[in-house]
Image (cartoon, rainbow, N blue to C red; front, side):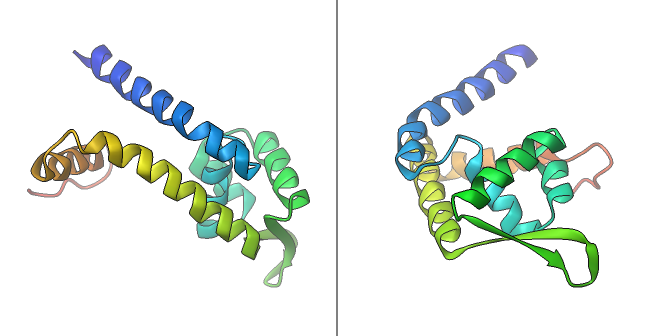
Length: 141
């Protein structure tokens, strides 16, 4: 059963990615760009984005360079520590992040319509519980 669950999760992720990829390509984005833009929106520092995305630092660094060249993010020195760079989304970056989120959400919502609202809420809760680390305190239902 466990392997079957993992297989279904992987297949769902792959199907969503394949469905959304043409939209992302029209926006000039690679498949992982929306996730990095979202992390930069939240964290601003490359090391935090690396940790959140669980990707190698050189990969994230190259992605940030490409996004910076495309005018989607801007790099600046951290005023609190001039040895660190921080990134922020440009207005264009914010707009593309929102548009890519909309395409991704619409693709998932089409699939979620197969479930009742009650089933959707339960699925969301189950995924939240499963995504918690082992050390996270367990909430009572």
